[in-house]
Image (cartoon, rainbow over all chains, first blue to last red):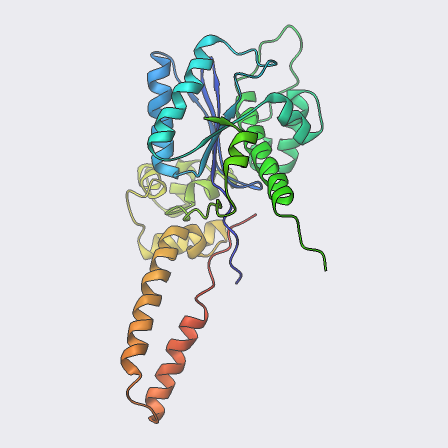
Length: 175
Length: 135
């Protein structure tokens, strides 16, 4: 039996109007928890309680979310402030928070739309495949399940960025 | 809270995370298998989904019968299903093995003691082993 290198346990979050899209990865091919947590009233308070519970239960190494300061980001003020607020319970548990822009996600997957990213993730992770929402027509509002794939995309972009960083900072020694 | 680029470049060569495995991975295996808690409870021969929920949240330890049933259902060894418990036990057992071996260093040349020593050294030789989670 070989010892696997436990990679970073990543808690990826995507706040939406109805609550939070959540995916926890132990490695890029191993999601250990996923779902959409609905929050109806006192959204910020309940979302923060939910995040605190996830941090305690799963003890992630890092929290990954969308970078709301990016120029391409078109999220509402409530979601922006929630993302800022989430970093507090994480920081109190010494868990760093990484922010990833939508452009970084698209560059990681080499595609340009959220649906293409979600389709790629669904093809790689059979656990999530059944949750892939149908293609959104221009007159349709976004399916809440897309937040799950957005969260997964942030986590996978994080793994990719870290892999690139390791290669860049510690290049393999050639014989 | 930092952008990924800033965060990565703020890390040093020693910044690697080696997370301890979770107490158990029952929820992940159940959901990957497409089973509900109620269906899993039925397979385990339990009438309610509550015990399954408690097992998943590490609020209750399963009995030997239930543990073997989990192995059968998920076709996965118990040490992978309960990875955190296994790691903890592994750590404790190795410590005790080392202490027992140290105590035995005095009596050499006895065939029975040599056999015992071999057994203990075999346990320690597997020290680097751990569970391999599904990828």
